[in-house]
Length: 122
Image (cartoon, rainbow, N blue to C red; front, side):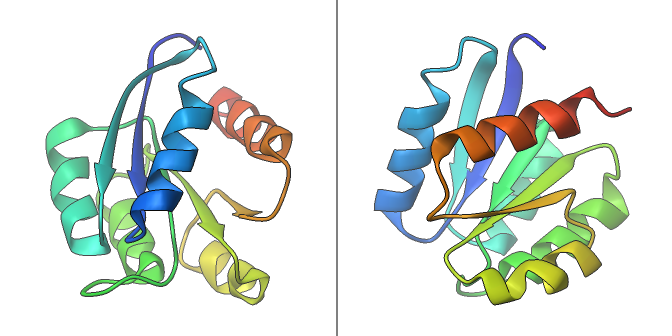
């Protein structure tokens, strides 16, 4: 894994900045882009073709679950990891097609482990 492209989707700037800061410490992460809601994410996936999307659940316009379902339907090769403070959304996220779910309160190593695992899958 080298130079993977990541799209961070979250309506909260602080959350996006935190995830970006974490990703920037991993040498195998290349370009990072951001979206503030699911509708914007869909446009960026079409344009940017990320390897992985880190998706929040609760956002305005198009929420993360709907955006995940649409991304996986149109671009099944794009990996989607749902990041949420609300762990009760885990089953919904996986049903929507997410490749993984990580709670925002989990250690950063949890996200790293999930990314490595899903990016190694064909």
